Image 1 (cartoon, rainbow, N blue to C red):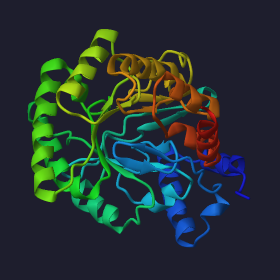
Image 2 (cartoon, rainbow, N blue to C red):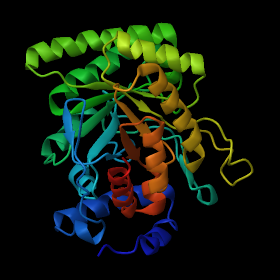
Image 3 (cartoon, rainbow, N blue to C red):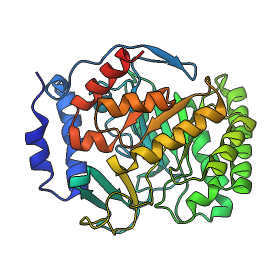
Image 4 (cartoon, helix red, strand yellow):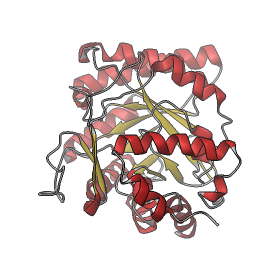
Length: 342
């Protein structure tokens, strides 16, 4: 029987959010190394699905951002996830934005972060990835360094793709974080054409060299107009992208007005982004048809939210902020609900 998360959360929430985050990852690693992961989570729900040419034991995954450096891949997988995505990694190490940069909005079950792709860079990231046992499919999420001009973004993404390709079950191209200046400009028509075209060509060269074609997905923002979603969907198909992750955090503050920290700069995640995310998922599904792979993320705080993502058109569902507020039991509950929702 897993330990009650409410007690653990009450202790963690007395700490600075970023300190609590780091402590949680270290603790998860330690518990897993001692073979005690069942103290934290139920056994993995088995609800097999094949997507992207990969076999997922269930439909619930960990979203990128929680483990930026791939330090706790096996420990996180042991919480019952059907897949794990780590990163965002950039070519060179970078410290990210100044602290404080992570804020809890407890009554809204939300977070605001402006981390800024803080990570240890490709070399350290790949060392961690190589050490993992890979019990479930592993996604590697790539981005650009903050110091790289937006006009040279393709260079950074291509460098990351070359480095991670042979180690990834799938690669996610993150152009939708609001916390790197100018990054979301890469979702614009001309910039997106150049980026996706360049990465598609790079991916085909790597596939020829390595004898293995790794699925590549684009992670998009929730703050897109309908016409922009349609144009983006067309670009995904045109450049042979294998799937889309919808969505990242939002710059909107709808639903949290007046709350402590609501005026902090950064991306808002958790319950307030749910409907924005669901809208984009629905638009993508309608435009892309029934077979195009969509991973839904944003505002999953209980099993009903996960099922709703599926009904909007998501094939798989990812968690992050919900895990912070609800604990590992959320993974089991969502996976079980999705297995029963036919």
